[in-house]
Image (cartoon, rainbow, N blue to C red):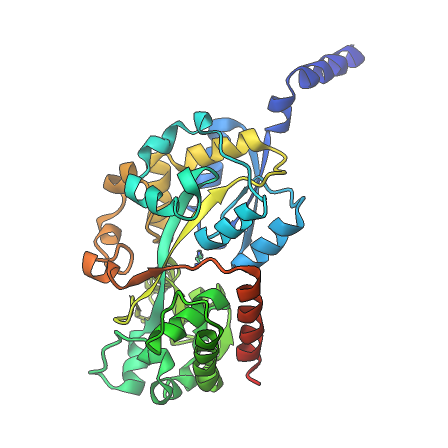
Length: 362
Ligand code: SPD
């Protein structure tokens, strides 16, 4: 009897291979980037079990994607990295017939993303944000004076200013394709330039302030800011707001602010895509479609404090978030944002070499 049952299970599985293979889904996403209950809800709705891993750097994701056979079904590269990886044949075209919730997406923002992925063939926007400055209002005021208004990259790139903050802890993202352009922009150069001399100038500025930078890391700053262990972080919008929320929850008296500096900042889009060798492409489509549900996306934004590109979700997002110009920049602030440049292999080598030099401080 047992044998018969096993045989029938085996037959059922082989008769419906897609169903059998699609009961699992391997997701690789940025850390601190999903609501507490998103995965649980997805499994409850679909019966698909999820293995969820995280990273905090596009370079780490890219290395895995270019090596291949990562085992991941859904990954979330930022749009400039996505474009380069599409060029390397890393992603499969989406089957849009499996993505009915695409109608929920904001047409303008998707058109913007299409400049990295024509016709949005391979990816859908997950969340978007800016790279600006998070700061501990009290600690900064103690060192720079109560009247000092944090509004400029001066806070971290002006030597005299940042030197006064060294003791309370300043951190930079470990993201060369964001930090070098920010420094170049501060110097009055085009942040989208791929001119080696411009990168050299940006690196020289970063090396000047390097002695006052406690560390380069792209996720640790959330807790450090929240706990008052550091006072300033060049960071990603939602992460800084998460630090603010954690501090408020801890009632520890730490008050965190976020600014998009007056000189401008990078605006980026993180994109959901399916690797060409994903073991469970059908489940991957189901997940992407699930995230595009208006309520699910709103829940994520309400938890991680990142802007999303789901027009249908907006009325479900907390007003505290939709009205915050640090999360949804004003039209005036949008004028000062720049988009990422896609670096070719040669430029990438220049950036990597300079970044190693900046970080090592030698
Ligand atoms: N904790 C989530 C961080 C997401 C940041 N995305 C990276 C954008 C890079 N330009």
